[in-house]
Image 1 (cartoon, helix red, strand yellow):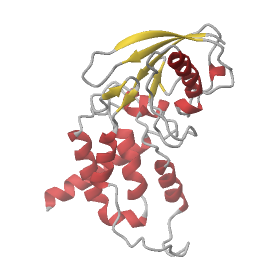
Image 2 (image 1 turned 45 degrees about the vertical axis):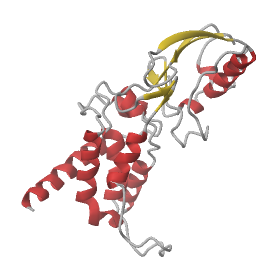
Image 3 (image 1 turned 90 degrees about the horizontal axis):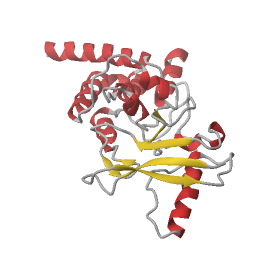
Image 4 (image 1 turned 90 degrees about the vertical axis):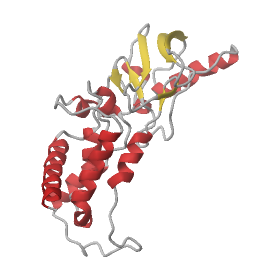
Length: 250
């Protein structure tokens, strides 16, 4: 298949960005989106031109590195997948595809399609911890956990920190990310001792990083590659209210 790519190019975070047009010819329909970019980059290299910089790692949908906005949608038109899992059969021969980096003040562009998402790391560092002994494995039934709580915590832990939720939100809110990272610890017995401190610290770190506020439009869940639901945001709001109330009581 033959395609036309409209790609965001930017030499560094301080340079002015622009859209460049590139032909993508002879692309196999079974190729992934990132493999398609590899083919285009090989052509650019052979012509002596600068290849398109984009982030990637596992190419299996678990690392969250492939932070691309494709035709205006985080990770592209298919549901519950990352950009590396998107295949070219999702497009038609002759299509024009717009490719841009995730857009958020807290995600500054490093180069071309690569953004700095270290703000997520600092949020997790602010509160994503437990203080119980973790030096050796415990017996499976040593700490009983209700099945529903275990399943919900596992759903929250599925977050890969890709940032699609931020890029899709009109306010560039990180509420879904923070809710997932806080909830998967807060819902388990091991995370209860630090629950209030964890919640307040992570929310404070999110605000410090410059992410916007949540207005419950649910774009975040719609583009989440792991289908993490907005119910976790409601849970985070409840946990934060309780933590703030206890802080006022001293």
